[in-house]
Every structure is written in structure tokens, then in C-alpha cells.
Image (cartoon, rainbow, N blue to C red):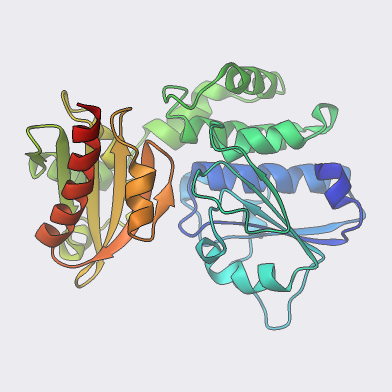
Amino acid sequence: MLSRILAPARRIAIGGHVRPDGDCVGSCMGLYCYIRDNYPDKEAHVWLEEIPNIYKFLRGTEEIRHEVPEGEECDLFICLDCGDKDRLGFSAPLFERAGNTLCIDHHISNKDFAKENYVVADASSTSELVYRLMEKDKISKAAAEALYLGIVHDTGVFQYSCVSPSTFLAAADLLGRGVDAPKLIRDTYCVKSYAQHQILGRALIESILFLDGKAIVCHLEKSTMDFYGVAPKELDGIAAQLRNTRGVSVAILMYETEPGTYKVSLRSDDAVDVSTIASMFGGGGHKKAAGLTMTGTFYQIVNRLSAQIDAQLRGRS
């Protein structure tokens, strides 16, 4: 599929979702390296918002483009790890003008918005899907590092239920190409800044249990984030840590983006499908990890989410 779609294209754009995470960056850079290594006659560029510094060791990240010049066009736009066109952010106009479009994704909320789509909702990561589409004898060490990073980050270092035998087989093959897994995992997944540890502590201390201890929520005002000097991308992992509370089925992390507007991250176990809850409010994601944006007060938002969580919990009792 990938070689067929790449064949007629000369100018190729690769893009991912706003606030790019490990899987988004890993899949984009892995595919970028693969194209640059094996198709010297093609011009490829990655279009992403500013990525976290921890990912900048990957080859080619210094060439990522953050603005689309007026009139910029491409023969093919490959959209990775993105459930809908709006999530592309600044690169959406380039996607719309592209001669052909391909979406590779694993979000259950994906609506097959590209001309061609490879969407596998139960896959561990978009990086694993990109790996599946590649000719294995053409994957370089640089591409392997990027794809391995993406798999590691979207599986929580192989601990989430989305991990399957195919995930481990892909990871093993990528490791065989020279990836230093212990260093990559420590430097990009485990190590946090002092400010990140401080905001995590604040979040845990101020968290609130509700629904008889089956749900937990924490909200961070913008003033609090400014006090600790952390950006939204530095809150990764807090929702998952809240979810590790004994007896909790659903964890909610809310952080204020502007007065009265909150970005909401949901994490759950098998008892609740948070992707359906997120989609009800204009968001999306996976069964056990989803996100959305909501307006209102902290209590108004929690009440709306609580009603949907309670309905699913009662439906299983």
C-alpha cells in the first residue's frame, strides 16, 4: 500500500496532530527517514508544531517545518496519528490542497477523512502501523529509533492493553537495527524535570475522589501552571498516574487553557469507554485514553462527565 501511494508523488508532506506526543513524532520522523533513505528522487518534509526537546535527538527533527507558506502545495499529504482533519492544526490547509491524501492512525474515533486510509483501532500505536507498511529490508537505524520511540510512548513501555504479539515482534525487529532501548526509554519516558515532578505532586495532593471512589479528578488553573513554569506538553503522565489509584476506574485531568476553557484528559480501565464520552463533547481518542476541550466551571465540567461515567458504570453492574 505505502509503496503504491508513494510511487507517483514527488513532493510529500508528512503531518501529525497538534501538541505532538511521542507516537506522533516517532511515526512522522520514522516515515520521513524511510522516504529520505529509499526515495532520493522525492522531496519530503515534516509539518508539526514545536516538539518537546526530548525528541530532538531523532534524525531530521531540526528540519521540521512549523508554518505553511502561502501557496505551498504537495502531491501527497500523509497524515499520521490524527483522528480528524481539524487536529492537524496549522498544516490542515496543506492537507486540503494536496493531490492525494493518506491517513495512518489507530484512533477509534477516526472517520476515514483522507482519500486513502489505513486505520486499525486496536493497534498499539501509529508507529507500529507505519512499521507494518514499510519494506523491512529498507528500515534504517534512524527510522527504527523513531518508530521504537513511538511504540514505547503509546504503550506506556509495553504495559497497556493495546499491546499485542505483533507489537513485541515489531519492537524486537527495530531493536535489532541498533536501537539503544534502555537509554531511549530513560531519556524520553522516565526522566522528568524538577518542575514536572512539582506539578505532579501538586496534582496528586489536590486530586478528588468521587463516584464512591471509582473516579478521580484533578484540575490545574493556568495561574498554577505559570507558577511552576510548565507548559501543557509537560503534563504528560499525570492522568495515567491518577488512574493508578487503587479502586479507580476513571481518571480525569483538567488544565485551563484560557479563562473558562479546559483541556480534559481521560484515562480508564475496562469498565468505562472514555472515547464515547469524549466524542459526546466533541473530543475523541481510544477506549482507555481520550481527550476533549470543555468550557464552564470546574464543577460544571465534572458534573457533565460524572453523569456519563456513572451511566457506564451502572450499565455494567
